[in-house]
Length: 61
Image (cartoon, rainbow, N blue to C red):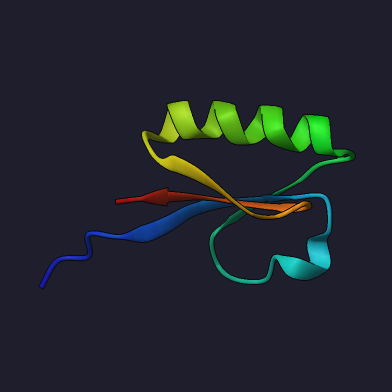
């Protein structure tokens, strides 16, 4: 069995919404969060998904 889909990172402005064992990046504002999510998407070869106004996940499909 191989894992094909997983969360690479969480990017948020609200650390209370980001619990877990994956990498969590806490940002000061929405602009920083969007910039960091876009960079991580490229660096990690993943896809950024905005789950709410203060939370992105970077996933591998």
